[in-house]
Length: 153
Image (tube, rainbow, N blue to C red; front, side, top):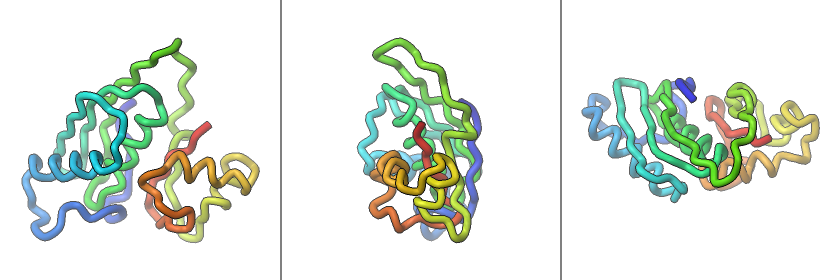
């Protein structure tokens, strides 16, 4: 998919203490972070180069791919995710949705209802966004500015 941009100082704090951690240690911290969500991914590989994370592996659908990218990017100190995840479709390939419609960066004052109204035209579809971002989101009311969310079709 390519490079997806994130906000450097927003997200989970995985790199506590020494900000000058080696890239290998940062990559391992991100792998552990991704593993806690139990994504359905095979051959997961993560590399960190300064503020960019490269994620590789195989998944069965685009939604799982997007969840992994968002979880890897919503980490404090990470600015870009280089998405090299392959989607291995068990059924015929469907047309891909444009990247700009797959992700949403939360702004100050946003709620899932407000975002739902903006992207779907219906505030009551907020749960669709919430479910697409589980398990990274544990509560629909707990989102923060700078966080990147997956927006399902």
